[in-house]
Image (cartoon, rainbow, N blue to C red; front, side):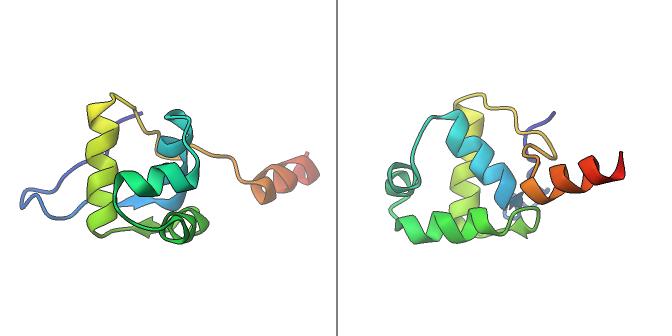
Length: 93
C-alpha cells in the first residue's frame, strides 16, 4: 500500500474511482459531506466513484490526494473488491 505519487512536474495525480471511495469511507463521510470539502456537488463525487477501477484526474483528485496525505490514509492499489469480481471468483472455484 502506498500513497498516490505526484509526478515530477507536480501537476499530474491520478486516483481510481475505487480509491476515491476508499478515502471517503476511511474518513467516514457521506458523498455529500465529502463533496462539500472541495466545494463540489455530491453528483461530482458520485461520478468519480462510479468510474471504479478507471483512473481519474483533475482538480478534485489533486485535493482528494492531498487530503489523504494530510490524514495519513494509505491508499492501496486495489482497495475495493467490486461485487462483479467477487461473483466471478466464486464461480471459478
